[in-house]
Length: 387
Ligand code: GAF
Image 1 (tube, helix red, strand yellow):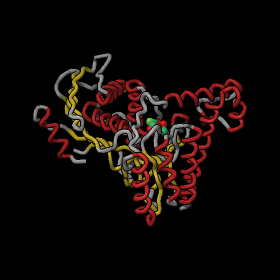
Image 2 (tube, rainbow, N blue to C red; image 1 turned 120 degrees about the vertical axis):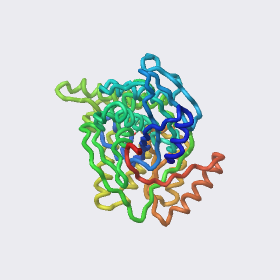
Image 3 (cartoon, rainbow, N blue to C red; image 1 turned 45 degrees about the vertical axis):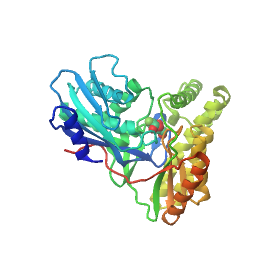
Image 4 (cartoon, rainbow, N blue to C red; image 1 turned 30 degrees about the vertical axis):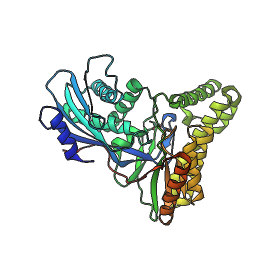
């Protein structure tokens, strides 16, 4: 993303003064989907695409003047307005400002202009990139950088829950804040312990194929999936009053079988996916340590099957991209992110890459009238002040 581009728009749009510039990335996730809000493991990394914002206090007590450079849309609002702005993009700014205030940051009025190159609706979490970018800026401008990285992650998640209608987990905000170039991160979402995993699969490429089917988690059945998981936990906890069951992470396969009839086929199959996915992340870590990319790929295909048939968050277009990957001998392929559209992530041998991309474009276009978009994955750094 271009610093000069953002700066020129900020200066032109507001009073001619420069502010500070902050950036935060979107994310990929190698494996571990819908496990974060179930206390399980995830394996994300930040990408080299994200959101860049220029911000500057404007001397008012509580007026925020916000400009979306990409949408050419300006929204002003008052931080004390209990309803906040209506525009969905401006709600991220409103929400994160209030969440940072809750953390003790004395946020006052400010001007902000931002732009992004993380594809919207592709499942790469442009929303987490916004939240963590704005949180980084507010922490710096008003909070002496006293808010910890983890608190910024949680403030981003609370923004989704309280102002945007998505009951998400912590993976996306975590990846955006903690990302490190060249590294994936294995995060235990229950203990919040994590480790950086240098990721350099020699002879392979990671590539995303974007179906361009619109992915919007607010209003999608994302929250409904989470409710299913919580329902299963409730039933297991009722059967075992002696135990401590907070999330599906605390539940065993045997306990799931015990409640199979009472929770119904749908919730049972969703919980089954989550238990399997937790094990798959750990298997992928072991396989990566052993340089065994065939196993990594096999687990990715298993995840796709589970997301499609058990968790039911795929769509025809994503299943088709997965089939094309298989036909082309791609090592691993699966839906990435929350689902309901967006992209597949593919681990492909370098020598198969060109043929795979050409074939995927041609077949997809023949069936759906447009090509999938192709993004080669470059693993980048997390939230930061640029200047
Ligand atoms: C979305 C959510 F925001 C994440 O918290 C996570 O649950 C993901 O879907 C699925 O793994 O990106």
